[in-house]
Amino acid sequence: MKLTKDQLIKLYTLMVRTRELDGLIINALKTGKAIGFFHSGLGEEAVSIGGCTFTLKDDDYLYPHHRGHAIGFFLARGLSPKSFVAYHLGKVPQDVEGPTPVERGIFGVSGTIGGSFVLSVGMAITAKKNGKGQVTACFFGDGAANRGTLHEAMNLASVWNLPIAWICENNLYAQFMPFKDAFAREDIADIAASYNMPGVVVDGQDVLAVHEAVQAAVARARAGDGPSLVECKTYRYRGHSEGGPDIAHYEPRPTEEVEAWKKRDPIVLFREALLKQGTLTKADIKKIDKETETEIEALEQYADECPRPQPEDPSVLDRLLYAE
Image (cartoon, rainbow, N blue to C red; front, side, top):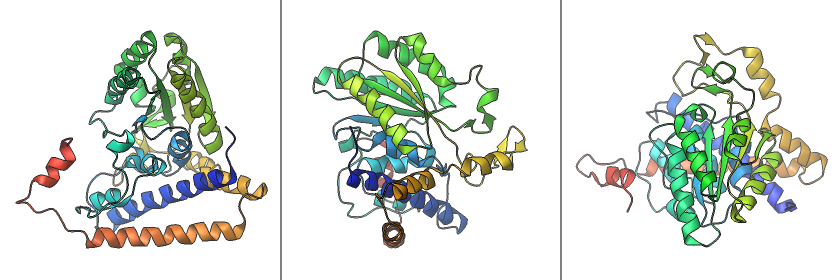
């Protein structure tokens, strides 16, 4: 499907919003407004936005991964970022409008890396039994790809011909472990052949390349032709988690490696392409930047004004831990 001008602009805008929301949480941690873990996804915006926007229907199932705490996936599925910001600032969101994550097929994330695979198979079984043409999209990192559950899940998904698209966001580091030191092969997509399904490698910095590959995998699943594997080669700009060391094994990540990837920043690449083809003007970009800045300021103010959870009211924890 060829994307329209409005759709291209939406992809760009969502990537900008994803990056700025990621930055909001990083700044909140730096200034003490937020306390806790955050796994930044700066540099990887093309995967969530390209993979989920315009590829999934409202009733499809989606299993996001933890990078950026899934904010790109939430935006791509049309969810309000209010809860994301409020929860990360330790507040209880109020009057959040729009669909809930469950209404967009997002049922949380596993507390264990690699738990996503078997749970996604369960979602795909449900999708197949429903008989409504639903699919499941499971996003995971290269570190998770070394878990045994991947092989069990991919094998069963192929044996049962389940409607599922596996999408690996390979940012070349599993916490502090370089990809090249953890895998005996260059491409994770190669393992697809072991389970009799297509496997492709795409440039994870190119949002349109991601979109086209995931769209093809989803279309194949929706047509009843079974699972596929898409590997998106990308890179994270920051360390595994905020406040932790940014290292490869026991040494700092090579500066030249980080800077080389930043020269292929996914937002800059897409912006330059849209400018070159005339889809966006410099005035359009300034407008998008200004609107995003205004949105971020409003979201932070909204979170500031939300109440903190009261120790005597455990209902907040109930809502976070249990499905209604």
